[in-house]
Length: 122
Image (cartoon, rainbow, N blue to C red; front, top):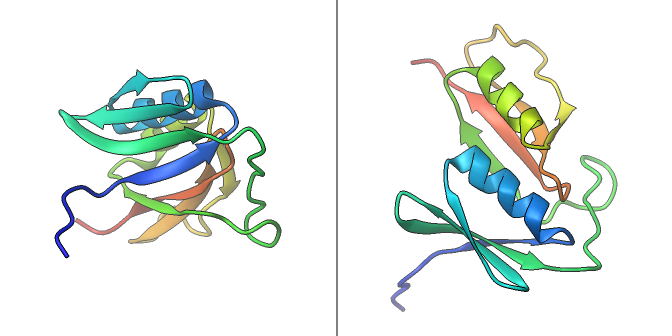
């Protein structure tokens, strides 16, 4: 089997908020239709957002299960945190030790999908 394209698709009740969040965070643009938005980054299709009017937000970690999880590796946690919050995301779990050599903080996008901002040593 040959796979010609890989696509991650998120369900969301609010296409505008979800696609604006991920386009802003990934530095991309939104190509929109009525029930589907595409996120393009550096000329490549990176993420799909599908209208799901009855979408139920995950309740991480112990409630409604998460449907997908992203780990985004960053070099400046404070700046990345501010950008996520400014785009409409929210912090779910702060890192236990922000001064540790490696770690992660858990966030949710506007539709409630959990993702992590992670860091590793240089």
